[in-house]
Image (cartoon, rainbow, N blue to C red; front, side, top):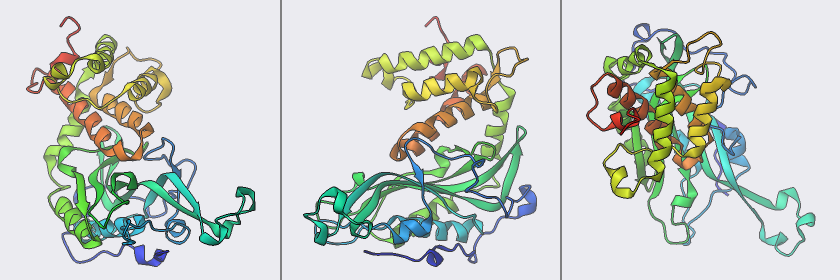
Length: 349
């Protein structure tokens, strides 16, 4: 079993492009407790929280069919964090969630009954992983909410061909702004790597470094795009039309869907967003004295909140899709649509 001590995952700022904190508002509190019950999860679904120590000392590292080691979860995170710290500066402790445990036993316990297997004879690794870390000193106030820069990634062993010889393994990484009150990630195209394929930790570091260097947190375009979402209102009637069109989209033929923006939000996400709108979400749903309208900023966060219930391996892409959809809806309402989002507004089409 390959293990790595927790100390090796310490995030130490290295010489690089450090962004001036004074231009970006408040720092993230040094004493924020990420293990507090009041701390919002960045993803829920069927995941469980795990410490880096448990991940490194209590979980085995799977191998390929030729006994070559895979890149461990902890080494994946360490490589990305090293790249991020070189570009952005110090990071907060990693928040890590896992799912789909694969439980086995050591050879000496091969013929024991399940009830006879000792804890020391069991083996464990998690097939899927999602994690985030915040950049200290990089935060802004957007529409009355504190947002801060976040880096993170996902990994699913099910996407790797472990039955064969050593081959490139698949990972996803991102950098985005996160809403502190709910830990919603606002992932945009410029901050999402898609899927990267790597053979070594050095490959992960290089590709993460390239992504982070290309993302300028001081660039006003992305921040203004998010902030301006608050200026566009969506009436209750229009919201119902949008939800109805999202449901209709799923029943369209392949050719019809190709002529429209790609939507990766299924029934579960749509239902969750509607419940949040109706009052289930205290931050972005309807207020008691309101007129039934919400802003495009609220719509984005309702959708981003809803994708927390999807599996780890599809979380990043669906989160980006939810953010892109809210931005597209705003453009359609303003008459600036060039990508086909107007279809979701016109109930008569």
